[in-house]
Amino acid sequence: MEQLTFKAFRAVSEPALCVEFLRQHRKVLEDFGIQNVSTNTDTWTKDPDTYVIVAISDIHGMVGGIRVEVGRTGRKLPLEQALYHLDDRIALKLEEFRPNGNAEVCGLWNANHYSSKGLPSMLAFAAVSLANQIGLRSLVCLVAHYTLRHAVKAGFTIIEDVGQAGTFTYPIPSIKAIAMVIPDAITLRTAPFPYRQQLLSLRLRPEQERVELLNGEAVLIKYQLYIEGQVLDMTTYQSIVALREQYAESA
Image (cartoon, rainbow, N blue to C red; front, side):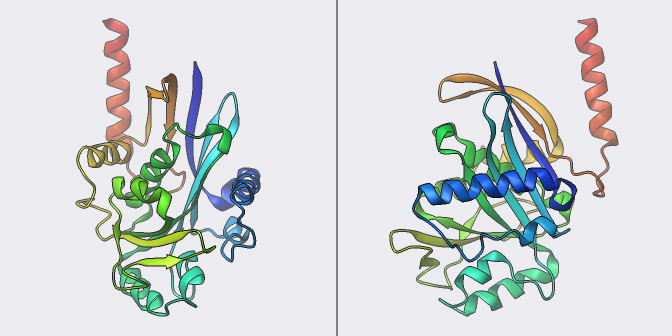
């Protein structure tokens, strides 16, 4: 059985994985005919406020990834860098979110040879689940029209007071990009049921594994979403795991 691991880490802690993420992401963009995207740089690899999740198959290697870039004073998130020249209201909108803790979920990609397995939604869910570890109240993202459904499942709603009701022609004429936000990343009240339950499961148990059917194939999914060095009390979770293993052995 194939094993697919979702691993979260601070970008500066895993330079080799960041290099591979960047290489694979650029290849996917090129396959779509997208080149010279203003936000597709390597600056995030050296940023201590950037967190990364990669999907690694024990058969195919790295097959997908996503980033969470935390906003701070003096830092322009990729969303602003991409859209400011199209609508400068985006800067004011992001400034509204920043004081309470805001980040952008960005850089989502999955390898073309690993399509039709639901990877975009799984990566988006993993990214959103990190909000409590990083101390975020809200999350924003910019999605292409063909990935909108994945963002909606994760609780994102359209920011309708920028662009054309939240929509922009970017980065090429054939793609419509939509600016979105999760206004309350703590309660996740905008996430539809049962997706909200999945998000909360990942948040409460950032280290878990289960077998899922991906495009009809059974795959062992392993989540490693606890970020080393973050302020997160794992004591209760670890005691539950220990008890579960104890009772499993005695059953």
